[in-house]
Each structure stands twice: as structure tokens, then as C-alpha cells.
Length: 103
Image (cartoon, rainbow, N blue to C red):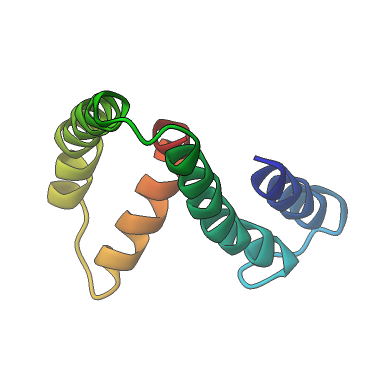
């Protein structure tokens, strides 16, 4: 969460204070660093609780959240966007809107 917060701070600083378009910037480094940190955190949680019941509960909740995201965010966005770069734009837009679901 700290990496995401730092990415947002840098992004808003560049957008609002510096008045530049941060297409590729330092904020992207923080956004990308979020994924290895999340994976490391999940691996530490799994090692801390290796019982099957907790793993099954996590799988059920994650699958339900994933299905909701697909139904209400991915599918409407997929149908509404066109053009050569629509997949990239859709994935980035969906990722930014749904990151709390994956925590």
C-alpha cells in the first residue's frame, strides 16, 4: 500500500504542481513495485497459515471477487472500447479501479 500511495503522490505532484503529463514517470516505478511486494506479502501469509481451510476460504473469496470484477468492470469496458490500443487502455483502467479487491 505504501508503494501505491507513493505512486499516487508522485503522479498528483507531477499533474497538479508541475503541470506536466506524467505518461512515463517515477510514479510508474512505485506502481510496478506494488506487485512484487504484494506477491511477497501473500507468500508470507501462506507460510504463516498453511492449513487447507484458510487456503480454501481465500480461494473462494478471491474467485468471487474476480467474477464480480469481470462481470461489472471488465465486460462493460471491453464492449465499450475500440481502437488499436483498447486492450492496454482497458487493462490499465481496470487495474487502477480494482486494486483494493486484490489486497
